[in-house]
Image (cartoon, rainbow, N blue to C red; front, top):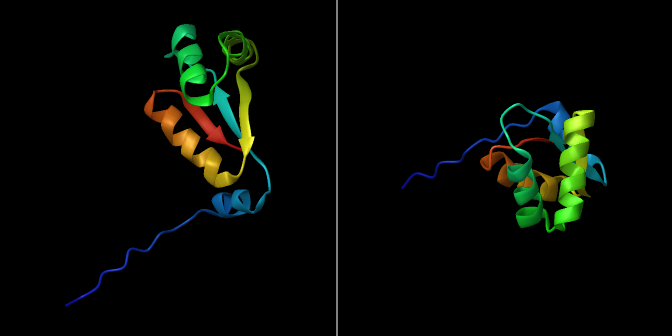
Amino acid sequence: MSTETKEETFTLEEILSSLKTTNRLILWNDDVNTFDHVIHCMMKYLDYTESQAEKIAWEVHSKGKCAVLEGSYTEMEIYRKILKQEGLTVSVD
């Protein structure tokens, strides 16, 4: 019986980010998603009110990005993956 192990690699940026106590989830402007879709995702996955989600959508549109959540690297990475699956452009800072 053989046991296989999977090696997982990390970039220096990922390692350094994981050492920070607080990380931010950044939502970026793109030419694909509508205001309605961004608002829907902010309300559904991040539990923002409609008014808060609209403000986020406008900030992303006018400034190019917006920090939408803060927390541990692991938590931000989970939300990044969820929002990315919805088609949003997000990163962890």
